[in-house]
Length: 292
Image (cartoon, rainbow, N blue to C red; front, side, top):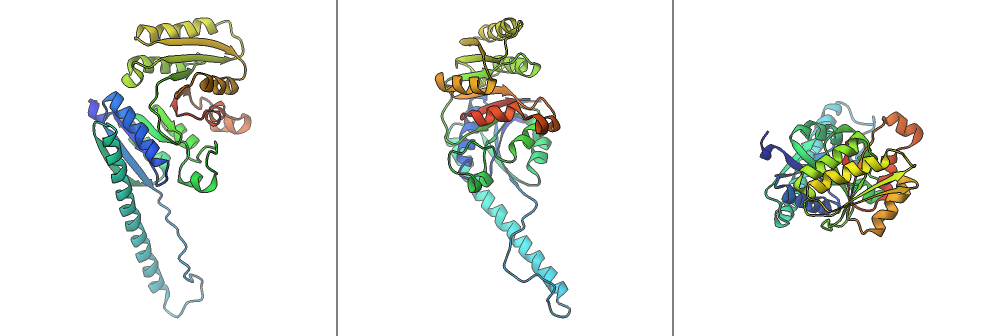
């Protein structure tokens, strides 16, 4: 697969979070010299109340007329949604190109967000989307740290790295890897070492949690791997609850982007026992790159 097939895919909705998604996607595309695609997924269900009386109290032989009327209204609504989406995507495309993206394409699709992204996965190097979206903007106050309803479902549906961003762009200068020695975070070390995305940026490796006899060896491997790849690395093993430790260290070290493994357990287990991924996402107020 050539480079042009491995794109940065930014999934956006028509909310004020979209500009930030486009900015981070353009930053990633520029760093990796990868094409950028802006994707707007329109939900198949465009139900919208019109105020008309659609009850059974209609005149004789009026059912066929009503069905045609409803069909025409649905078609007009779909056309309106597509046109709004085209204008919206064109604005983001111009923004991304101005921010230095090597190229930027745009696409609209009808369907479910998780299914649509899973279909695109083979041609994607990095997904980018907002941690909150249009629905969260309507139902949550500004500054709320709750997650958008699509985040966990989408992250579980795909297996490429996913950059979830918060509101307001800041070009990353310091990066932290929440490292636990698992296969996923070891893969993350290899990804950092082999990708141009973080070249030239200092990397902080933090292992938090219960004391482990293997921890020093695991952290030493991660540090040595990144140092050999030319990175400036700070590595620490810290006791305490991972959520609290990572949130504290992000703030204390002025970290701009967090990397961590995501949803290693099943949705049922997360329902019964909670999810460390969700806890860390809620605690972290900075963009977070999720590794699957």
